[in-house]
Image 1 (cartoon, helix red, strand yellow):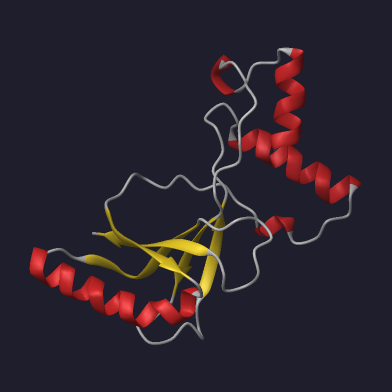
Image 2: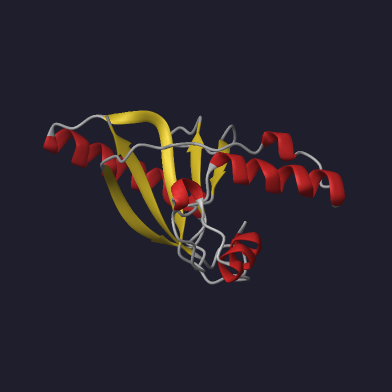
Length: 150
């Protein structure tokens, strides 16, 4: 998407709703992890999130995926889909190192904060934002761990 957008921006091709295109930097990797308990990540399922600018719509994403699947032979692209995630409130903390090691103490700390503040979290859903450098060895990245508030 980024390469195609840059090409179209140089040509002056507008984006969705005739919005002006520009080059953009990729935001940090994000994931939604579901089916996680406070003590285990064994059954966790995750969804990789890649943010995109407003001027790149679902149809353009679909065109790029079709091209990758047809021309390049990439498989499993049917699993890629566009989501509109509404703005939400979160409790968050920064974690250095392995996500799975930090899960239990973070979950306990969040439970205390939720109870003390009278808040409710969405069950089983953790939002993770990777702050580490690309190519950092496994376990040496930093993350923002978030619990979405109901």
